[in-house]
Amino acid sequence: MGNAIVWLTIAILSFMAVLILLFIYLVVQRMIEVRVQRKIADYVKDGSDWAYRYLIEGDAPAEQIIPDSSTKLIAMEKILRSYAKNISSDMVSARITDYAHQFLSPYYSKNLNSLNWSTRMNTLHRILEFRMKDLLDDVLNMLNENKHYSDDEYLQIYRILAAFQYEDFLQHLLNPKIEMNEMEYRKLLFELEEKPFLNMVEHYQDFPSALKHTVLDMIGVKHLVQMVPFLEERIHDEELEVRVRSLKALSQLGIVQNEKIYYPFVESENWEERMMVAKILANVDSPEAVSSLQHLLKDQSWWVRSQAAQSIVQQKNGKSVLRAIVETEEDPYAKDIGKEALGM
Image (cartoon, rainbow, N blue to C red; front, side, top):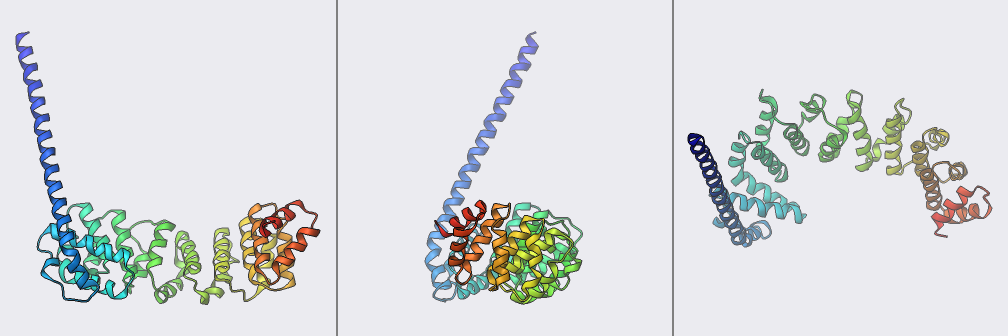
């Protein structure tokens, strides 16, 4: 019994000793972290004026903003990111990139080979943020080597290739190392300039559905009016989602080359198609367009009725037309939505 008490006492004391050591370790680590953060803040404060002289006034980089330690490098990252985020200037962006090439590239090249995920991921973000094309080969090596990286890393790598307009980006897009959803594809295509985007669209039929849908969306977002014929072909696609997104992109472009191809959608079984064609017809000045919109004012879907009313208002003398409809129309839905659009 006495031995049991002794061993229990030893176990309790040992456990308490471990807790005390752990507490001391955490306190020391926190003290170190606070000291490092204070040091970084001091570097940011001391280097801000010199960074301004370099980035805004065009002076040569002074010694005060040349990173000779990891804390100073972090401080300069903070300064550069602040300028990149808050100042829209090609000259400032170019100077940020020049600085990053000259002083940060060696660190980043090394960090891409780090065993720590967050170090690699943060480095990829900075490469994109500072537009460091000199590290493109290092980034490509991550794609080409046998080592496996996380989905987040691969997505960021593809964003870098897109942002740098890499000539073989399409091949990587067609044979990605990860499966991507529409939101992820959207991030990539948003980075592409017009010419490489249009070249990519030539391979539309080879794309998975998620990428096809995103391409159609981005044509509208990028306002690529030369793609109207391409979109007009897609509105006859067998897949409903392709038709809807093509109609949406056409409504965003606001160009109607052949109004007759849209009228069949007035009687579509799908409310989204009817709503999109109502939006498109706002750009058509013809009796048939007005008649179709009047028909859609009585639609069973509130969204369709609302868009039809808005489209009538946007047309020449549209308010007068809609006011007359409100006064003479017997359909209660049409009257109500007309009044709503007119603010009555």
